[in-house]
Image (tube, rainbow, N blue to C red):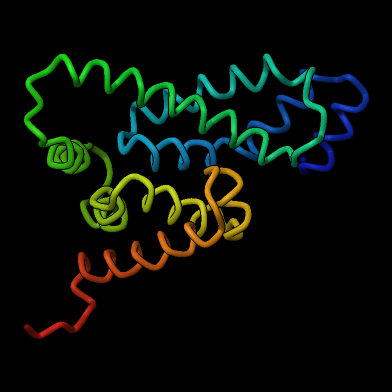
Length: 182
């Protein structure tokens, strides 16, 4: 099923069939967006599930002012942002060791069933600041244009390009590809 097929089903008022058709189209992309924002696979899976529940609830009101994918990503982004807000409240009650990045890397390394080399890109992305990680994920992994990334993240196109430039430089440094011989 294609996105156009889903839109036809929506026009026909067949919301259940449309929903069943859009899940395979957007599941992986929503999960990657949630992971990019949260940096935690389990939390990303929870957010993706919650996002699709919100999509289901909002499907009868989808008015095509935005593309279907943009609408779904906005819901996923907002769901992830709500999770981040909840997380901040919990973290603010903690003493705050500042070791969240190290905990993320430890959790990735301890995941059973995947070879360690499968985490190379994930480990590098996990070390980027949140905004750079989101921009890189949307631009490269989701193959979005700078304009689409800007719209989805609510920032100017120039800012997206700046984050892309800085993230590429940071990834090169982290991967040891800079050739800097200081």
